[in-house]
Image (cartoon, rainbow, N blue to C red; front, side):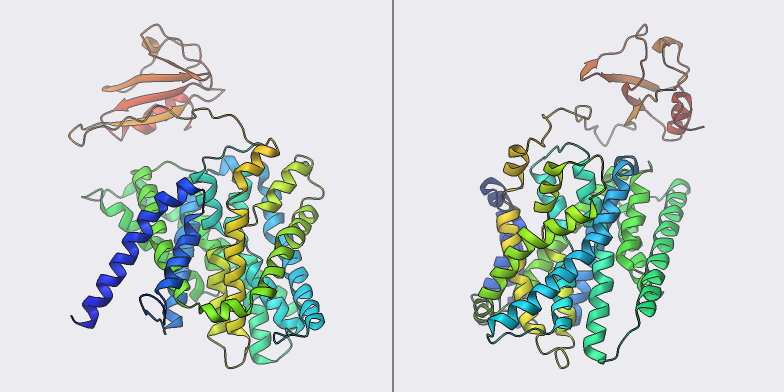
Length: 496
């Protein structure tokens, strides 16, 4: 059998098994991400499948694209109205929290290895580089665990955690590049130069994300592609273009793709649910491939050699650095109590982001001689974080009484046959809607548009002609023409 066919068979079997074990991991309560890493480790060089990877640039690019897809998917699945009440807290966690974590971990590693006097000795700058790499919580881990467990958290904790994990990569990325540059060039960088560079990346990334989001919304409103299946491909091209173009313009690419997704997620547009499902599926597939590849870069003997430092760093990160950053960043919060802050501290999950960031020093291993050690320590930290924090999130939320009782937020799922030339939309009647108090028979909905079900105060009402519309009613409306959706929204007072 030729080598290409052998690699294809091995790769397809590994991918197939990785997808199948997600079912097992869900039953056992083990995050699926850790299983993907384990499969990559087992399949690596001098292991079961004897697969090796030498192109670090390709692995790094794959990781960056995957992170972009994860962040974009997280943004498009989030409505701005849900994160608006906790926007300031989320931003503080993503900025002040990252700075505190980075410097506390850096100082701790530097001091620890000085006292340890073992074979691993970190300088202060190397410690700060390690701190910046592990400082960011992982969007993929947070999104997947909270949603797979169907956790309904009080005090807007879910959107805040998703906002933090989706946005804190930007500051962590900047700090990682800054400390890596200082190590490789051995040239000092003034605080003002560092601040101006950071400001440039944030401004360029923010403008790029806003512009792309707005332009794509306009395009989706005007564009009518001949085949609906082309829309997900169009969105994939948008994500890759946004990441690449922003990086070319020296902006923060991760901020740009997250903002673009957030803008799209807050508006309705054609085939939105299909696009979200596609992005979610591609993100999961890319995560599986990326985690397997990152696992291939790990050598078991090297992982064992750093177990002592890795375990101590993991404990410090989970029980000291993360709580310190959370309680400091949210010190002035009036809406979050100590229980909320304890839970947020424990949701400091590390995952794909730190491991991908750890590949950047590997490319400069000639000047950063501990790059390989750093990668294996970060890998160990991620494994312990997913094992201990990922598996205990739901029990901790119950213990702290932060989970809300399960209630159904949406209408019952109804799937129309592809042969039916109609679509179902769900619209909530605003508090100031002009149709409140009117009977359905009095509504002048467009022809061939019909209210088929109403959700009201936790129950469902089958509408009749004399049914009176109330505020906050969730209406399921069937319409034959997509053009009538805006007309209906205007009558409900959603569009003006």
